[in-house]
Length: 100
View 1 (spheres, one colour):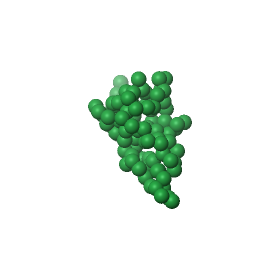
View 2 (cartoon, rainbow, N blue to C red):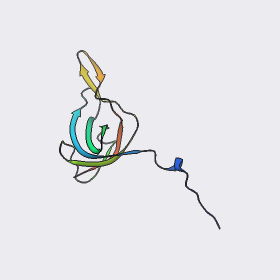
View 3 (cartoon, one colour):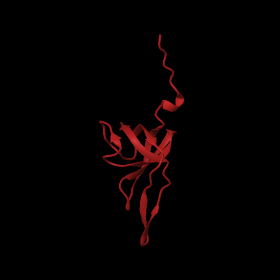
View 4 (cartoon, rainbow, N blue to C red):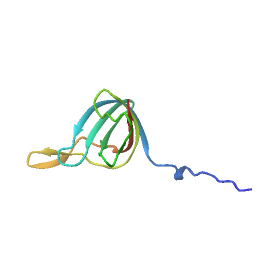
């Protein structure tokens, strides 16, 4: 008889988020947009069209409910005078997101 034991390290390392989208901030110096998600699982995340998978309803706008997962890393760059600076502080990059 063969038994397989799942290690907690073999599970996807993505984190989850979920709540109403409070604000969407276009990244003016880099691809994508920052999405600020409210409770119950708040986060400030980077959405990159074509890299982040958007499910059927497909609305990334304030007021809609969202649920998804993300991986660490990502930067949203904004115009700051004659240069670019990271803003807002990003917790991670969205892997998958569904909205309703």
